[in-house]
Amino acid sequence: MSEERDVLFIGTGAPVRVKPRNDWSTMSEVYIMLLAGPTGAGKSSFIEAMGNDKYLGISKDQLQGFTQTVTAYEVENVLARFGTNMRPVCLLDSPGFSDANISELEIIEQVKKWLHDQRFDIVDTIAYFYPITVNRLPGSRRKTIEMMKALITREKYNEGTLTIVTTMWDQVCNGRLRQRADDNFAYLSENVFKDMIAKGTCLTKFANTQKSALDILTSSLEHYHKAFWCALLDDDMDHDDLRQEAHGRHLYADLISRIETTWIKRNSVELDLAQTSATQDPELKFILADQLQETTRILHKFARQLYDIGPTPDGIPGLRDDVASYVKGKPWINEPPLEANVGRQLISGNDSEPVSKGRNGSQHLVMTQMDERHLAEEHTVSSATSSSSYQFAVGQFFTNLFSLK
Image (cartoon, rainbow, N blue to C red; front, side):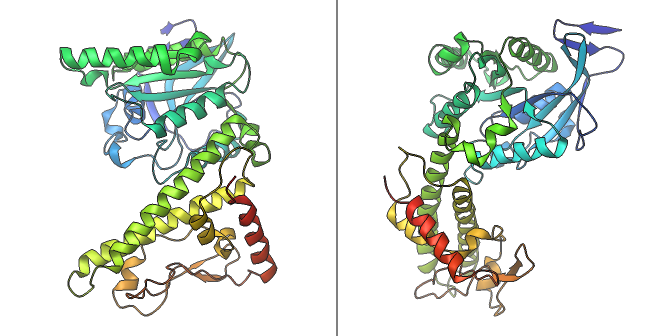
C-alpha cells in the first residue's frame, strides 16, 4: 500500500523516518533540498518533524547553532517523482546563515565539498527558513535573502527552485500574536519576496508536524518542476567566476563586513584584557584570553577566505585602512586556521609556546606570550616554508585587495 501524490510517493507499509546518511555516492539520482536560514529558524525542527522523531535531538540548543557543518539526512519511505523515475529525498542541513562565526562563503564551500564528495553536481531546491515571530528584518538577514535571490535568478525562470518556509506558527498562541504573524506573512508575500513569488517561488507555513513537513516537501517539488533548472550548480561556486556573479559579490561584501565587525570585537576584548589584573581577577583574565584567541582565529579565517576569492570586485569598497594594515603581509594567510582555546595555557604560567602543524608538517607558533603592559601583537605566526618573496607577494596582494575604492 502507498500514498501517491502528483510529485511524491509515500509508502504506507512503513512509517516515514529521517536518518543521517554519510555516503550517497552509490546513488545516481537524488532529490536534494538544501535547508538554509539563520540559526534558530527551525531547520532542525523541520527535520525532526519530517521523521516524526523528537529524539533525533538536533533541534535542542538552537540559539547556539547545533549544525556547524552541512549534514545530510535521508527521508525513508518517501520518493520524489520525476516522470516515471523515483528518486530518494535528501535533506541537506546547513549551518545558520548570519552566524557570527561562519561566513556565507564558508557554508557555500561546505555544500560544494559535500556535492563533490558524494559525486553530485547540483542542489535541486533551496528551502529558506524564516521565523514568522520576527518583527523586523535585520540587515544581515536581508543581505542573505538578497544573496539567495541572486543565486536563484542567475538563470531565467528559475524562481521555482526556492521555497520559503515560515516557521514558529505553533508558538502563535493568542489573537494578538496571530495578527502579528499574519502581518509578517503578508509583508514577506507582498514585499520581501513579492517578485520571486510572482515568478514561481513557493511561500509556505510550517506547523511543526509531520504532515506539514511532507506538504512543504510536496509543494517545493511542484514548484521545482516548473523551474528552468536547479537551485545550485557546483560550477556556480568556483572562485574563478564567483566575483563576477551577483551572488558572489554578495558573498564578498559579507566577508568584508564580517572581518571589520570581528576586528572591532577583537580590539574591544584586547582592551578589556589589558585592563584586567591577573592577580585580582585571574578567572576573568582566563576568560578574556580565550575570547581573544577565538576572536583572532575567526578574524584570520575570514581574511584567508577573502584572500582565496581574489581581488576586490569593482564597485565594492575594500577593507578600512587599520584592518588592511593588520592583515597585509601576514604569512599565516597560506597556513591552516589557528587552533582554538589555547588562551588558558598562555596566562596560567606555562612558559612553553603552543604550536600547531602546518600542511607540510612544519611547526608554527599560534600565539606569543602576552605582555600586560602592551599586549603584544597577539598571534605572531612563522612558517618554515614562508619565503621573503612569498611575503612580498602576499603584501602586494593585500595592498591592492584592501585599498578603499
